Image 1 (cartoon, one colour):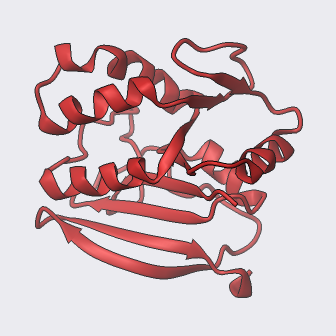
Image 2: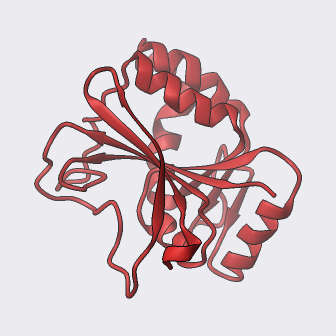
Image 3: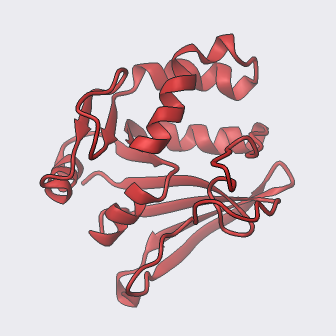
Length: 191
């Protein structure tokens, strides 16, 4: 069975974007870029919530004309060629996406994706879609990159829940001497 991997950047005060939605702060050094590329290598489909999708679709199709950063130059062709699924209550179609999944039978459609043959599914960023997938027990791995800054507001890494979420630390490392990346798996025993 395929896994859903959630890959997300956060500040040390637990925000995935700034008070005004800014996402100009993650540092993609050589080691962080390599870590991200490893997750992409494990995956054959990228998953996005509508908000993250809008940022991705505005940048990655023409990324090389906007940046010469080594990570951008390496990832842009992969982004364009990898099938993408967008989850949205409002979009019916999305350029660059293979398909859009709405809220009707959402959990069953995702469970069916996981049952299909293929590599893992990579969910990048966001909190709303991650919360919905977590609520249904569909995320298998959480890869959280904690950057050394305090944003002082913005969307939280995890949205408030009615119950606890048990996770098991599998790995941690420091990338580029400043970003701590932790990989957690769901801990069914702690639920």
